[in-house]
Length: 103
Image (cartoon, rainbow, N blue to C red; front, side, top):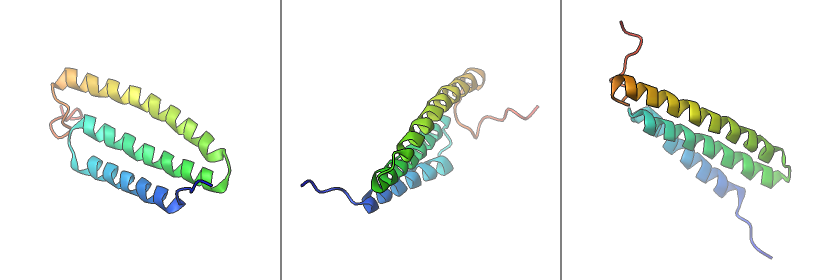
């Protein structure tokens, strides 16, 4: 009989990924790196949902992950388009150097 990985390990990995993503968003000023850190945070939440879904034997968490991934794909397309437009107008992707609200 194959041994399964305990739920605690999945939750530990997910919390580590979420922490890395949160620290990346708070410390980095490059818009692309911040965007990747947000995606890392979304993936850590997806890992948690799949782990609990498997642990409880219910497929509702996996279905919810499908919808979260759909929204994340749409967010990726819109976010990259915004970053590309920002780079074309300001010639930088650093959020400290961009101030679009100022006259």
